[in-house]
Length: 404
Image 1 (cartoon, one colour):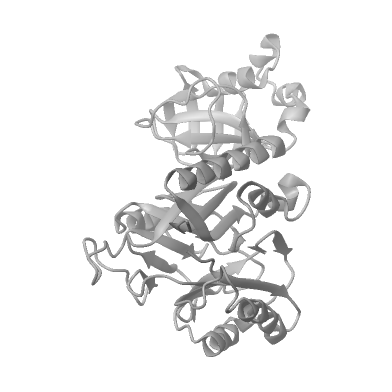
Image 2: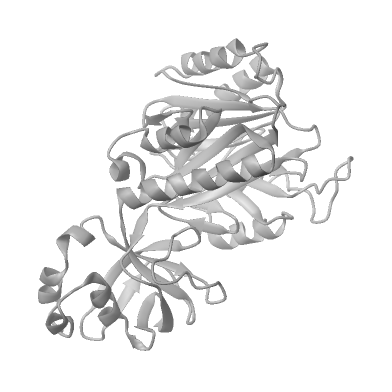
């Protein structure tokens, strides 16, 4: 099995940036261990190059001979071991897949219907790479609907980001709005993990009463009382209805990076006293009501959902990314597979602002899994399985049989 050829570059001139990335791709042609061909291209651009997306895609098609391309714009573009943070940059990868192993989709070109088979008998729509426009109405519902259309329910990708309008998506041509991406057949072996950047304050709770975005009670107790207890606020202060006094009592070192709540469905298994964050939807805690003892969150929770209060934490984020990579490495080793290429989508709130330095995430991935072809972007929201996440990283690997 061979690696997918890839390239990345930064330059203020769109043509020069693209040519520099293509030179890396061309330089790997004929080199042992690298795929000589490719039939699907992935391309990610920062906002500095986004106005020239159409010219870039035309040049990529002309130079590579590959007709099918997918990608989008990101606040930051990532590649193997490097992040381009708001620089005019491009990252591209040529995927060498079965000819009927994928189909590019968009609003104008729907994915294969449920139950469809390829000529070789594989499930035509088994998984999908999905890019989305942040202004799309009912985006969460559209993502859930897309997940139903793929056999495994496995989606990965993210919401376009960057200071440019409109935010371009690439789906064989440049477009904007809605969803686009690539549907993969069951002949394409994909392995994915979600990593979070939060640390739980304490154990999880059951939402026993809520309305709209207000959590009224947790485990039958006033939600604000539970939050203050999880934060370790002195018991004699917890019952005050003086908002200023409560704010002064909050432990500054624990809330400096913000307060959040992780939510999961009530039908999902409990994660115990010190839960991890692989399956939680993390949303901002946006307010407290000292008089009515409730908390407001940037979500619409349901009674019976599980909730855990948390803070952003670089150490926890590093540990969880190591966990995700370790699980993927062990899974591939057990199944006799190796990495051909990968896509990493991270949240715009992670990166330098969370880890303290650019390139920390992709550097950690490389340290854990070795050097391999990787492209991706920083998103306004991350897509994994059937959900829209926040504050997460989504790492997806194309796998193939290990060489003897």
